[in-house]
Image (cartoon, rainbow over all chains, first blue to last red; front, side, top):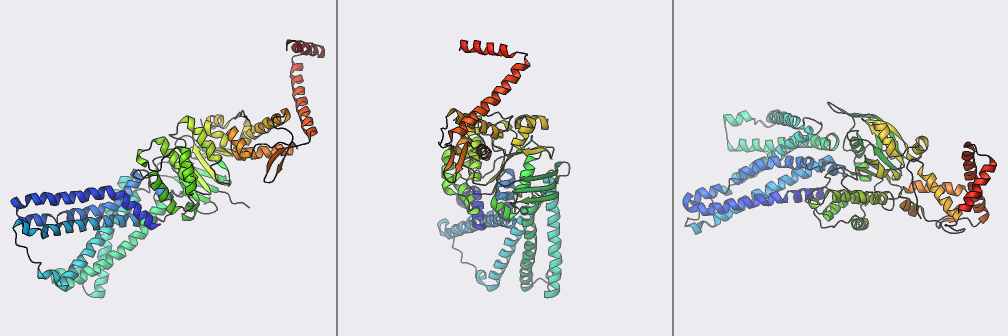
Amino acid sequence: MFFQLYRKELNGLRNIFLTLLGLIMGIDLFLVTRVRSWGYWTALHVTLIPLIFLLIWAMFRAFMLTREEWKEGTAPFLRSLPLSGWSIVGAKLLAAFTEWLFLSLATVIFSGLFYATAPLWGVEWPALPDLFFSEQTVQFIVVSGLNFALGIILTGLIFQLAYLLGRTVNRFNALVSFACTVLLFYLTAKGNDILSRLFANLSGISPETISLSPNANAVLTYLKLNIVIMLIEFAFLFVVTGWVMEKKAES
Amino acid sequence: MIIPAVMLENVVKRYPLTRALDGVNLTIESGKVVGLLGHNGSGKTTLLKIIAGLRTPTSGQVRVLGMAPGLETKKRVAFLPEVNTFYNWMTVDDLLKFVKSFHPDLDLEKTAELKAFMNLKGESKIGALSKGQQARLKLIVGLARQADLLLLDEPLAGIDPPSRAKILHALVGELRQEGQTVVISTHEVKEAEPIFDHVIFLRQGRVALEGEAEALRAETGHSMEELFGEVLE
Amino acid sequence: MQFEIDERQPIYRQIVETLIRQIARGFWPPGGKLPSIREVAAAARVNPNTVSRAFQELERTGLVATRRGEGTFVTTNTQVIKDYREKTARALWTDFLGKIRELGLTNEEIQRLLAELKEDE
């Protein structure tokens, strides 16, 4: 049943997904025409800029998918199905995440193609830097990637929860959502701080040690710890959001 | 003892500035066709949504098929809201497939029959349907399920007057499942009244009058339409 | 089969009365099968529950009987139908007479009026 719901969400966002995919391809084609005036290297770097936009886009996506149900008037139907609030919230988060993953992947692939065509522009084909394959670099990339991914999901969840809390009242929905967004961001940040201090006592690495004596290993451990912290926060917020979706929101 | 389809005890739904329901006591017997009658804003929709489990009362007890509203009751209840119910980007058949994946009790043979009766094509995009066609689609989704309790919020809105009677009678006649309880909210009493076993008049979040339609006719010598005017003005 | 329903009066009673009238007239002959509850409901455009109640009421008069799985049949005992017809006619007549007497007409005047009406026909 969760899968059917997830598939519905994917089908629902297909149009915008394709538009964005087209936009990314369009940017790349535009850059192809600019290689001569801007220079190959500038153009290659610009092909990666959509990644930043996608990061911000993905944070709002789950919330947008939730809001649409209320705006389009489909929320009562959806919530009358024998579905737990958690599956509804989860399907939207997962769909938003899938969209982000695929669009980011597409951006990177197009960028790679751009790189592959370097000789066409009379540019020396640059060798892949050795650094890319060092074990530590790979670890860094994976751990930062997970941090980004979790950050996106966590932020998406916060927006979603704030929106749903706005739906527990019949007036001033937007105001309540706004206040809840601010409050939830503060609480999540505060929670993150408290948890990282708690873990610091256990692991001996705290934000202070990193800012005082930054070294790759300490930063890596800190980032790994942050993954655990965000997972804990996510689990907690997810339980609350699902409950609000099922029991407290009104449609 | 047969469990009543719906039991409400002193149900209050309060919002910061308004009171949607102000102490409702009700018992809806299983197998009946019930008219929930009242003007706009009388609390009909809120009442149906509380029964459907979409809203939680501020206080009071709700029992649907003997249980508190929740996932278990949602499996056995079909609730069709008043407006814009479904996803515009789906086709009629997409929607039926979607519903089927959550409600295995959806009878696909019956949906085919109903599509023919309601004059709807499976490949039509829901967003392109007229208001009347959307209303028919809602009825298809509700009627093709073997739900124990069918809740219809203003099902006649948007349907042209000549078709209303036909659809209403099919609804309680050949289309209804044996023993199914049907609650229909409406303010268009004239067309609907011959199909009601029981009527509930709601005014400002309270039950102004309720009873068996036939008993009310015998007692008052009035039609439900006349009572509607009398009780609710 | 046609039903005129007045929503101000209990619907089941109107269905009972209509069916009794039809049986008395022979529209549903002795031993014949009555339409099903669903058919009556569709014709009268009312709830089948209401018709089912009307049928129960009708059975109580002895004019019809339901055979399980087969349907509802008009009694073969024509005497019952005849008695019922007379009983109903008598009731109507008494009612009518009462109203006429309220106008202050004597028995002779009523007789004369009836004779005149017969001639007109």
